[in-house]
Image 1 (cartoon, one colour):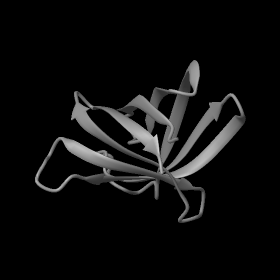
Image 2 (cartoon, rainbow, N blue to C red):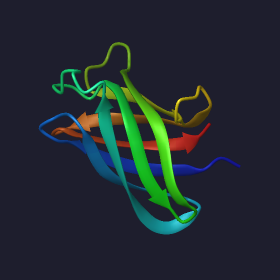
Image 3 (cartoon, one colour):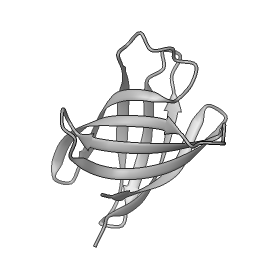
Image 4 (cartoon, rainbow, N blue to C red):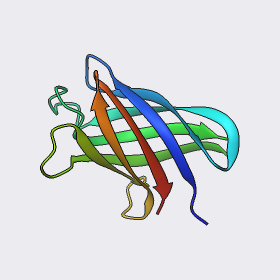
Length: 109
């Protein structure tokens, strides 16, 4: 049975992301940070690649986060979290952009 959850991520002035998420396997709310890579990507939009970090009940987790626009929309994006330096997909998500914030949901791959 897949893990299902929800999240929000806000963008800092340098283009990095911070936010919180929760899922159906724990009553806790967790913090996530994502550092834009490479750092020279323009921070004006959410799309791009990031090194994502969070801590769950089982301990620290690192992933490569890719955010790509949904075709035909300037306010929707797809998110993919892969195991760090791997093509193994961990989670898929979709979010909408609202006031420099992503608000969305995700599920395990």
